[in-house]
Image (cartoon, rainbow, N blue to C red):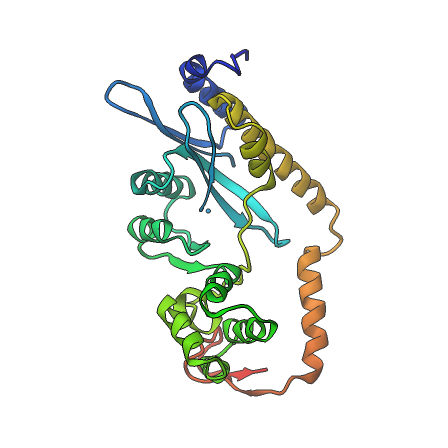
Length: 294
């Protein structure tokens, strides 16, 4: 496959052929190109077999949309990418619609963002039944900007954020100042507090943009679309190859991260006491089994 990696006009002309070759080498990929009435490029989406934005300065490009997920070893893994217009509701909605097509119906998904109102609004339109929350650190940063920064305040915030029951949440929440409680209440408890998460409880501390995109945005601002996507595709291949090698080296059913978490919780369990589970906590057990919270 031989393309011009420097000429922008020729790169867009060859782009459909490049996407076709992605399907040839990655049969399970999902791609989509949107054009205007004159058949000129507007948006593209590709997922090489969940939303952050990186701004770029190509001749025609303004932003890369990236959906990432957390794997079993607590590492971020890129799922899909899109190229389009930054800070644009239509671009964001279109990207999420293509993501929905790629992951297909019937899967329970949740979206964790860095308190981006545009993304949250678009998620609500495209995935009305999905959970949409905020990462803990993004809420903490917002919290600090309005209340101030102190070690004690950070400690109290995470006590509230990670409270397991609503009773524990209220106890920790009451220790905050009135101004602090007002700031957090205005965000909405279901967006960030574990005790109010519906069904599955998500623990996403922070969302990091893949490092290679940060490097690309700084060192290669003026690149053609084929060059850009080729870098992304190679990164995805490398990432999954490295994860596959690591998976083959595991000696147990647990990843290193899970082993660390289990060990840490076993150490903490030495001080646990068993109490009956409050009725507001959903239980995975049948109703005829006694329910206890440790």
